[in-house]
Each structure stands twice: as structure tokens, then as C-alpha cells.
Image (cartoon, rainbow, N blue to C red; front, side, top):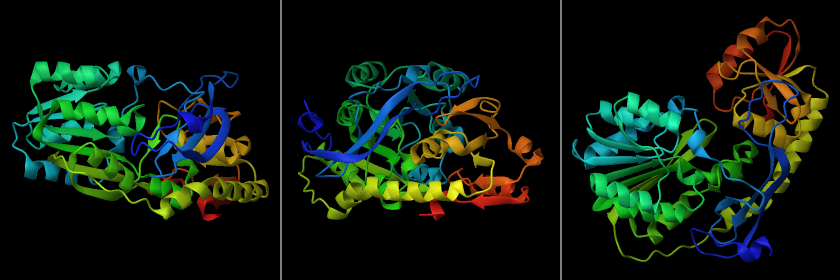
Length: 390
């Protein structure tokens, strides 16, 4: 059976999709190897888009979704500058003793902010055992599990219904986002506030940012189709904002209770056109980048060793040119990243102590101050910003 026959968009129920881009078989991102000979798991990575609402989805025909019960990485360092604006909205709408649930609480960084602002009735739902232990160590109430309909029933029985539900950077990881929102409605009071935050797909397709496509993100929403999903499920959407974050932007959807109205959606040809042209534009960019890399002084170093960087080097085809990746995360230094050849990860200190010219790639997307510090300490090195080539 073809994908087109199986596809049903979770936002608009359209049964027609087209290919956004097919990267073929690639190493799983976020994998760090202990030895250069160690093998990395790979997967076929292909993304499609709905021809009606432009929802981008990972084609999971040959893909095993991630098991977040074993995840140990924390996201405290990724809190956006606008976090205070989310809290201000809650401060305006809620009382300090109102019951607030965060779905996908990770290590409790956002719950910490709420607690610091005087909210006292907080619950984190987190599938990771390691992150749940961190939450408990901070005296947060925790449900160490995935969130679904059955868990919603259990939470209602144990704690009652919620006055507010926070869902930050979780919806894009969920195989069935529609079911997640339906489960949120189950635990919500009639006037419950719901806040959803997710990456903005329009930023990726408009700016041709292929590195932002990640094998752990099953969906990429636009401002328009995220609002459509919420309104079709009778969330009373108060406002939908787009805020810049690092090199891209995030969508912030605020809902205040529920209604029973119908929502008319008019698709935009611009969203669909950007999706249709994405693969060709990415190929043109990669061809130009490879030509530039071939004539650049060697060795070539890349800044950053997280999944956006490994994705960029693999998807663009320049991974085999990279001698080392520069990263100051102590959990990565000394390990190896498959690009697809195994490449050693070194600290910025070790890089700056090396007496080698060559080329330095500005690939720590959005972390400009850190990149500037490394560049300022580099002499006789070609500095190359890859996305300026396009």
C-alpha cells in the first residue's frame, strides 16, 4: 500500500500528502560513540507534508519512534528568553493555588520558574526515569509516565481536574498529537488554560533550514495548522504568537477554556509552495556548499556536536570533510559523532591550542556569542558561515 493511501492528516483529516525531502539512510542523530570503530544505528529519514494544511510529518514506515523512558538529557539550558511572558499570562489568569500540570516536564526547569513565581500546586508528567528523579529532588510532584487517555483518567482520580495545562516542545514528539489534545481536555476544567509551544515549520521551509529536521520530531506545525488543530477540537484559542528562538522561531498557542464553534480553514498556497520547493532548494544549497568546502583550506572544523550540527553535516553531505567537532559539553568531549564517518569531539580550549590553520564552520546555530569567542581566538583560519552561501 502506498503512503498516499495510508496517510490521514491529524490536523485536517486530508488523505493526500507529498514528499518534503528524503535524506535516505542516515545515522540516528544525538548518538555519541565511545570509540571511532563503534557502529552507529541508522534509519531511513523521509519527511512528507499534507497537501491541504502543510503539516510536516516524519514518514515512519521504516522508523522506530524514540523511547523517552531512557532519556537522561536535560533541557534547562534551552529555556527561551520569552519564558517570563508565558508566566505573566498565567499570573494574570490564575490564582497561586490553582492546579497546573506540565506535560513533558523534563528536569523541571519551567516548573522551577512557576514555583519561583509563587505557584504551589504543580504536577510534572515525565516519561524519563532520570528526569523524574531530578524533579523529585526539587520537591515537585511527578507522574513518571507517558501522557495518554488512560493516564489522564488516573490523574483526575488522584489530583482532580487542572486549572492550567502546559505542553512545551512535546507535541512534535507525539505519534498522535490529536489524541494528546483530546487527553488534555479530559483532565481540564471547563475554563482551563492551555499553553502549547512547538517549533515553527514555516521558519524551516522559508529559510531552507534542513538541519532543523530531526528524527525525534514526528511533526512540524505552522502557526496556521496548529491553530486549526486546536480549534477543531474546540479549544478556545486566545492568541497564537511566533517568537524567535536561536536561528528559528517557536509557536506559542494560548487557549482559554473550550467552545463548540466551527472553524473555517483556508489553506495558503505559500505554505504549500514552500514545502514543494524545499527539497530542490536544499539540493542547490548543498551543491554550492560542497563546492565551497572542497576549495577551502583543510582541516575543517565544525562548531557544535548536538543533533542540529550532526544533522547538518550528514544531510548536506559535507560530513566526510570534518576533522573534529568543537563542543564544551563535558558529556560530549572525547566522544565521537557519526557524520557518517566517526569524528572526534574536542573542547574549544583544545581547538584553540592546536597550531593548525584550516577552516572553521559557524554551525552552532544561534549561539553567536560562543562562536564569536572561538573565532576571536582563531588566527590564520578561514571562517565560513554555511547558510550565507545560499
